[in-house]
Length: 298
Image (cartoon, rainbow, N blue to C red; front, side, top):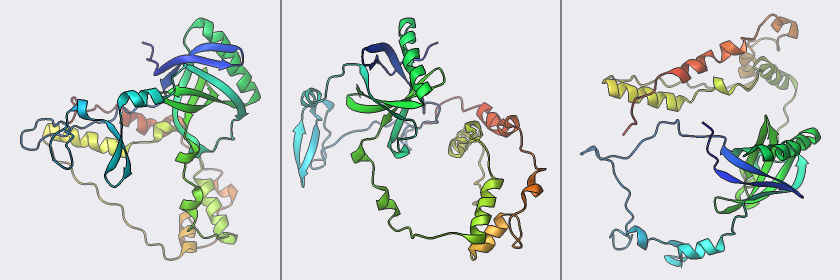
């Protein structure tokens, strides 16, 4: 069964255009979900909006958007006024610029989608645009109205199609200086730097998303299963707290030197073999294959 597109429209560059669809690249539907219920009756609760001054419930048809202009003063915006102010969608991803693939600061990346042609005729034009971008090693910037907002989208060749990532607006991205202003400018050199580089080298690996376990999700699944079966779950022990007194000694210990000498020579680690990729992901596959609760938690 083909996935359902979140958005359908046209990819356009100059006089070339083709029909395309955007498909969610990530989903949270597999996560355990909860409802809020009454402890006394066990029934599910509904959210109710009340007037904060009178305490009386306000029906849905009496609820409108309000922009606060002062302490308790609001400009009321009717739904039709908001709809009229939002730009109409022309369903076109209009490519305006091509840029080097590594030129976008990662902090601007928002949400990824898969972009693919929606029919065989469109596939030819789509393949032409994609091949040109791949050969030049460039990404494309395009604009369109997505979900009632004008969005800038970054397009990059990916496998047989493209990845379309919505970008955060400049006003949404906070200045890095605000977060790093208190960080002192320190120079690390000598044995400390050598030890740090050695530790990093011994832990070098490759990106394998199947090896990452959502420990919170796994713990909640186990808890729900235990409640269904009438079992008690033992509280996991908190990890022991480390007390780093001497940074250099801690680095030496981390490097496996027991506080003596420097990093091991390259020849000392040549015999160590990496576990094969299949073995590395076995634990993740086993966790993935575990049976989930047969009903939603309430």
